[in-house]
Amino acid sequence: MLTPSRSEFLTIRGLRTHVRHWGREGAPKLFMVHGWMDVSASFQFVVDCLQGDWHVIAPDWRGFGLSERPNTDTYWFPDYLADLDAILRHYAPDQAVNLLGHSMGGNVATLYAGARPQRVGKLINLEGFGMRASKAEQAPGRYAKWLDELQDPPRMYAYASVEQVAARLQKTNPRLSDERAAFLAQHWSAQNADGKWEILGDPVHKQASPLLYHVEEVMACWQAITAPVLWVEADDTNMWQWMGPKPEARIELTRRLGFLADVQTRMMVNAGHMLHHDQPAALARMIEEFLA
Image 1 (cartoon, rainbow, N blue to C red):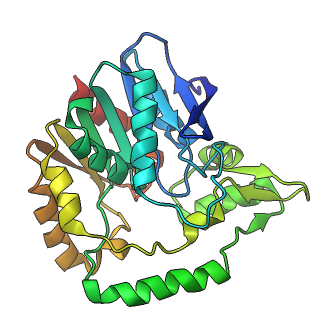
Image 2 (cartoon, rainbow, N blue to C red; image 1 turned 90 degrees about the horizontal axis):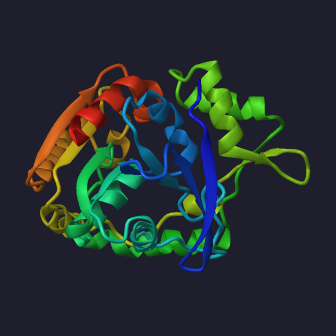
């Protein structure tokens, strides 16, 4: 049975932002932030498996799900940190929070925990590896690519039915059951004026960033984290495509984890990058053991 959720809309830094809630008001809070081209409802299956009394609070990032799009031609990563800061100040102004992030959300949450160490009591990073380290000489090409893409903005493919959306989700993740795919498709897409189903994500998110990934700046943030960290990786992750060839990337990931002062690392078996879809019960156990 699905745990019922409720929606709330806040104005966060000038944008109408959708926040999904599960559980009892007044219960211990657990904030969950989703990844790129995902939505807050993506955490439904994990919430269903939690055994304790929790108030789970999960926003849709700007330009995703039911949150407003800023009508910009470029998304800047620091905006996610500022949005998260505003959301936490609204719901938990005087307490250090339990914060979980998946993929892009894991990267945001981990940077935030270094920038605002006093605001995070415990941090759970699901597959938030970061990106491959960049080199200064890549800058001209990166700026050129960004300028080119501004002239030819990305578009989202429209689907004839919500069933096609579900099939697309299963193509990306073959572990996804028909029931879970059908649920996610209803929240991951919406019908447009032409009767087609469009993904609830601003296509501008698909555009290359003009900014390089400065890994040592990121590591400085990781090193500043005071909260205990639970790091969860999937045994069949595809994140190496962003990190580089696996043997070298594994060494680099181990180096990065060394910047976390208090970290527990766990491997989720029989799971891919969307491990909260693939093994929600196992993940829920990990979360509650860690938060206990």
